[in-house]
Length: 448
Image (cartoon, rainbow, N blue to C red):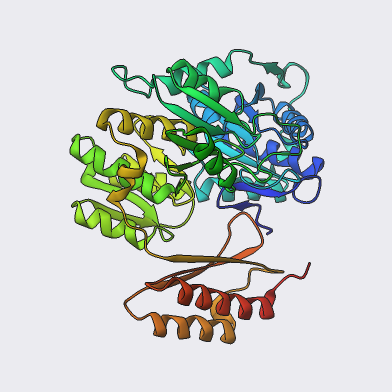
């Protein structure tokens, strides 16, 4: 059976398999049946193809008897919140996150606002490729309907604002905000402005094709330059669907998710609000982060890459804080998934309460030099089944010894092999990463 779901829902080039209208409609039918859904909240980001995908999903849900609540452009975490808040049976987001506009994707949330488990995703896939749902199409008054919900942005805005401490204010704080021409372009500036901040907004004019284009969390360079030009206190770059944030300090230096997570974990422990005295990260978490947690007596729990795996580990272990280097930070006391807007407010709250600039706060963690190289691949073949690749990885491991590590994995959302090398010498680890990348490229690389 073909596999539809990656690490974060279903993703691909819009209007090509699996994101054709026929398949999208079938996916919606299968999800409705698998989740026994009667009411579905449906949101999207700002890419052109969202109109097509929204219509196909709506048709599929209605054809299985579910009512659809359309909320329009809305950050992914906003859909997670609204699904639970509006007591819907499921939530769906149309987005390819940080990818460029020609791609799109479908993300599902349960009635509680959590991303689906591997088991539920497998169940949906089985229904998509099987015949079980074909005999369960309702007729007459049992067909679903579509309704547009106008107050959804206001609901989410109030929710996000309420995660900021009531006794604090952002008066006098100057912020550069990069909205990536994405789903948070309307709500994120309002949140900060209503809390009193002076906000300089960038990349908040979506045209359907400019989402994530040389901007946002994946490309924070322009934001960093603007922070220096404006003498701002902080820069905030959201990604296309608003579920993650990357920052820069007052000196224009990038502050990634590992550092933000370290700042939040240490602050939470000092405030006696770190549940389980632990924090959940991934195999990609920087070694410097692990060292910082150890120094402050905080347990580190490691998972696969993907914020849903982090959330699963948090719920199992009773933790309330976790995140990824890429900027997905989960404050489980506030939301059920990574939320870039909640993350920015929690970091700003720490800055205001401590009366320390981000450039000083970030010193709680010293990053270990890290090299990241991506290789476009034709297929995702097991690395262990390719002797030359296996040997190249082993050679790097031998050279690094105990002074570093190499991690080679496939992206869960794109046809990419990702090579990450950590070590004491930046020049050396870049050389190691490129060496392994070249071998992978020769074996399964994609040209063009």
